[in-house]
Amino acid sequence: MATMTKDAIVLVRLTTRDRFSLDADARMKGIPSGTAAAVYIAEGVRRRRFPAIEFRDGQPGRVAYLVGSRWPVWMIVELVSDQ
Image 1 (cartoon, helix red, strand yellow):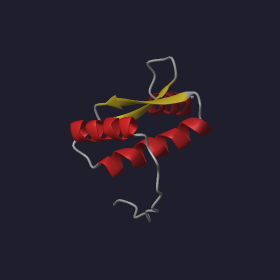
Image 2: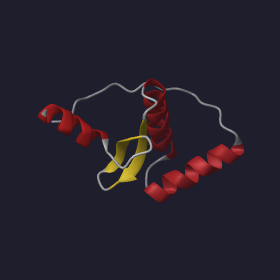
Image 3: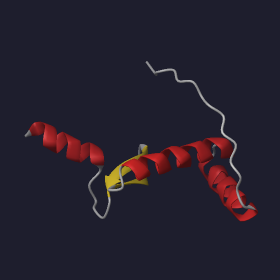
């Protein structure tokens, strides 16, 4: 069962060029521009807290990887847990 969360509204100013890029990316993914912006902001906050982690598009969606490697974070956690 999914956990219900409360959304907060944040107003963000973008350049026309950035807005165009955001809209194009959202259309390509088939999601609203606001949803794409929220995902990018959440990822940016996580990247700020955990600079050795990057997000890449994968089969299940966005996947966290160790920067500079081909190792997804879930696999590293699983390997460490097995020790």
